[in-house]
Length: 377
Image (spheres, one colour):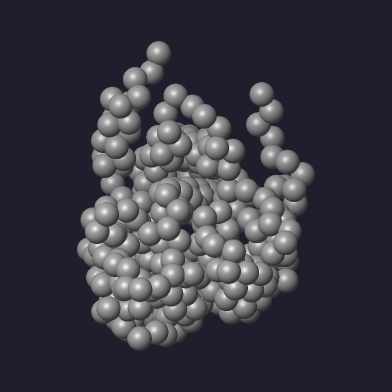
């Protein structure tokens, strides 16, 4: 089997490296050093460069000005974005647009997709439920009222909610179906409260109080939310991989220069073994990421549903990124505890990503349930 990336995928990754090359994580204040959020808005200048490089339309079809590429390509770009902690809603916008393209109606696609690919419209997704611990699709109820839908409920920790134009909100109907509503940020019945992430970025508590949404803006297709949820999770795994690779590179550079007893600490066996263990973590994170992304992109049948591959990727990403940043802080010594040193920001982002993915034990339990329902062999 050929596991190499296609020319189009490699070209997208190369374009992403060029766009993100100038992103400096230490240019943004540490979340420990400022009251409230580190910034009111995401990096609009970087967003414009992503649009100019056609990196916001990767997953869109040609009729919407896109390249018609897949989840693997998106993950390659996200991996590069995380190396510089790029402050842009790239994952949320691309995943939401892809879900609308795959499951939405013609009118909704015509209204949103081309503008999204050009960077004119920013999308995000409410995926954390009421508390961050319960299923997102159960946090909001949806009922039909004539040609419209009425939404009531609360979604917490919505990324980039204060800056996005639309929020995709999963909601549960009385018939126990999940629909996806495209909710404008400024709309009757929509109330946004401010929350601050571990990274210091603004999140939103989204309250829907009898918010009326037109039927054309509600995606009713079966499986839409499950597909979007798995794409978001896989994209988050790609972010952990890029972040972890950059942190290990920083650690290797530091260990090669820092001397103790007249020798670089990188030559000490205890340091080398810890770094080697983290390298193995990253390779496992990478292998499981590409397996999950490939399953989503190809829809290829397997012994288990694609959610099984996503669960394995989340297990490695959640555990692996934590181990990588903890080892990095340990090997950096005093610099690892310095909130003005860039490593501090990587640690804060890693913790946020780990919390977003959820505990590995929960994914192991979900994987066990899948194995029980789909016995192998």
